[in-house]
Image (cartoon, rainbow, N blue to C red; front, side):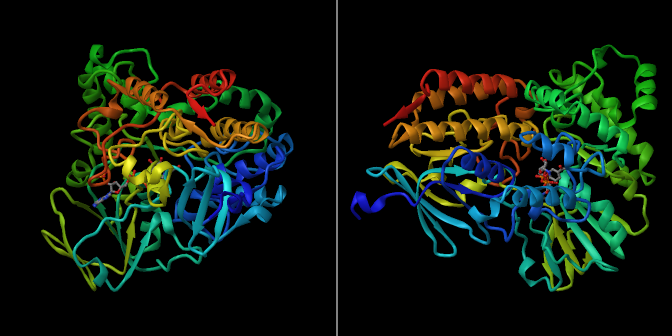
Length: 542
Ligand code: N01
């Protein structure tokens, strides 16, 4: 095709209409750019559309887990609970789409299958499963960090005659669980939230656990009118606090995201009496109040023992308590989990725990599952088995950059990106909260406003300047990846015994790297500002 025939249909294709995509489309439009959003789901919402399993809710306070770009919106929107339940966040995002008339630029039920960069014209051709071919000058990948579900395979799974459902692909019409024998695999955040609810709905619940979880009582509660009004009265300050906070949170919310220790006292110096007093005062949180657990594995193990003691005090059956107790990996290496009565659920007569390391799954049959020790009849199998996190949503697209390079090949040994935004070899492509940014270590809406705001401002500037290609420089990308690695060195996130979706260890065969920027949001944003001021230092402009 002649270059002239490759003139773009739009300035920007945005992939995904979750939080980042909705913000991006509004911001692009506000800056006078044309854009089309391609969204696989039949409606907006991203994570908060797909994850509609019983018990799904956010673990960041609702008044913080929201956008601050429109003072009227944040004043008018009413949250009902401290931690917002999924339906409420979905309704909030629906409202956003409607309030700013975003839907007119969104093509729903349209999954992106392939993207190819054409170097002479400096354009991307985006192809979809509905046979769209859209040519754009720039692409903004608002594909989410936890949006590519991971489905393990077991022998015979296809023969299982009951219902199989993934928490992250929960159907809008719901699943009939009433009185059913339910099995659930996975005890991360999704499993821990679903388990107490599934136990209430089914006639029996079997929990298949591979690795025990650190989870803390959420102490969720209804929001009173008074506390909501108090926050709304100081919203500008709260947003400022978020922008200036390491994790884009206000107050003490950051502890939820990082599980960093909050106290000043060393557990290594503590007496048994002090530790007992800590248990009496803080319960499960007693393991998080010491200063030395993030940097010293011996201290960390002492704190974990406090945690195990709390499980023993909560779960009546000693054998079940022991199976639920984390061992062999440090506290704080994974995303902390918040629960609503998780351990108490194992005191119910109609809930059974199967520890898969002692008793692995052998096969599924039409009627249920056979482990090494027994047969368990099931009507419904729920998979809370997590995600091919941070990279999966991009590598599942056939994404071809310059010179026919394919992203899934380039990232086979781990994601590499400059500033978590641009990728060498893939010009004119921007990634929202991608690998190399603070990403999931920050509260999404404020982080999105800052980082996606930077992307949109940059695109506006590049369009005004008639730039054909804007690409991360190899040396700058390498230096940034080194910086990301340097910041995580010595932390629990990269402890050899830590297996998590943060470091790719949750997926068989996936490269083990920790691609999150641990410098905090303010430092990250300062860096972006410096890059802009130095005429996009680290990017090559053609
Ligand atoms: O996924 P996970 P998730 N056989 O990867 C198990 C966010 N989130 O969806 O630990 C048996 O944490 C796996 O076992 P193991 C939040 O950031 C937030 O729960 O690998 N088991 C693990 O138990 C969170 O961190 C909220 O040994 C298998 C589970 O499946 C992130 O999403 C709510 C298995 C996966 O846990 C991901 O959470 C929900 C196999 N073959 C999610 N494969 C809130 O805001 C996997 N597992 C509250």
